[in-house]
Each structure stands twice: as structure tokens, then as C-alpha cells.
Length: 277
Figure 1 (cartoon, one colour):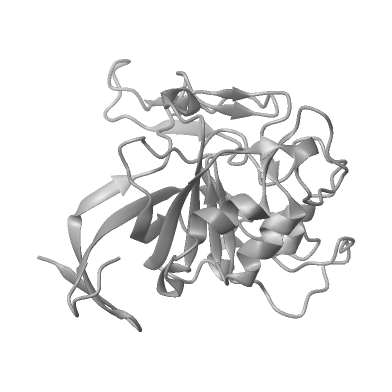
Figure 2 (cartoon, helix red, strand yellow):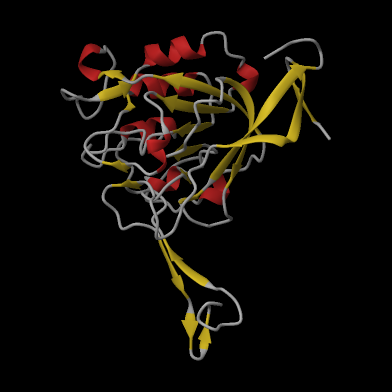
């Protein structure tokens, strides 16, 4: 069975069984990625009175109690509630189930050699995703697939599945984030731990620009809730080519500002109207 995706440029077919999972599997109490030196995600047997949630320990069934920090323990999706005093939850912002998406590959460049603006001021040794790099990678892309932008950074290897992020990972320049907004992307997915510099004095300026929030917004007063999300710490295998996809951004129905997530890509087949993507 194929699904038919109808867009202004034509109709395209999608096979539900032909998908690519670009989330990082989270192995509790095993090797896993980490950011900000956070406690690792963990799982333990739930016990209550005489009940033991472990078949190995003689219980009737397995019942686990898990602990994790979505922003630090693996693939996660966040909304504007991450940086505003107003309580905004992910289930309010992620209102799309199937999203036309564009996957590109970028090599972060030397921040000191780029003309792009950063806040706080870029420092020697910083690597950034620039507006020019995005412009090159997205040249000729179809606006029909500008629902979500998925970025794979180089170098890219399976080490990202268990990487302990330290120092200053690559991040986005402010010009790059403005460019993403200019192209009307509603969802941004990256294989980095943050779109901002890891040590930025708590400004999170790239996040604020993407969600169109004032720099100082502690009161939480915003006119409209942005129906936009940022997903961080994904992993895109080398075998997956750049191009157009249909994204299913799966998250649990948590009334929180972020949650672990499982972004799934469906391959887009030849346009039924004769136009390829």
C-alpha cells in the first residue's frame, strides 16, 4: 500500500514500510549520548509492598521506573516553552503529524573566518553553521518540502550515538537561523546537542530567533504560541541521501516543554504528475 502526498508541485507516493528512523536509541544503564555532564538516563525495577516488577526476581511481570533528562540524554524535541516564562507545552506546538521535509548535509566552518553574527560573540576555535552554507545546500530546494529542515553535520559517524558532548560543539550563527525562518521552515532537526553555543550566558539567542521571541522575555508575554519545534541530537546514517522526505515526528503526549522523540523519515517516490524531487 502506498500513500499519496498531494502538494502544489504535484502528487508523490510514499510507502509506509519504507522509512528511516533518525532518532538515537536510548539504552538505559548502557552506552548513551550525554550533554552538559547530566546524569545518565537510567531504569530500575519498580517495587511496591510485596510487588516486584521483575520476572527475574520472581515477579509476575516486568515494570520499570525510568529517569531521564530529555535535553541531555538523547534525541528530543522542544518547543517555545523551553525559554519563556509562560507555560507552553509541546503538545500545544506540535500540531502536524506528517511534515514535508528537506534533508541537507553541512560542514560547520571556522567561526572566526565567517562574516556571520553570533551572540554571544564567537570565539577562537568555534565551529558554526553559516547562512552561506545553508544557502548552498538549499539552493534549488522545493518550497513544498520546507515544512521541516533536517541537518546532518560532518564529520558524521556512529560515534554520535554515544557521544559525550563536551567543550563547544558546533552551533548556528544568528544569520543562519534568520535564513531558516526566511524560508518558512516550521521544524528544525539537527544532530547537534543545541542550536546555540553551549556556553552562552543563558541567552539562547538562536532559539529565540527561531521562535520569534524577544531576547528578554521573562514575563512570558507572547501574542501567539509558535507552532514550531526544534529537535536535537538526531543521527542520520551516511547511507541516507540528502533530499526530500516526509517526516513523522513522533513524541509522547507529554504536557511539557520537551520530550524524548522519534523522528521517522519516509522516502518520497517519483512525482505522479511527472515531476521528480
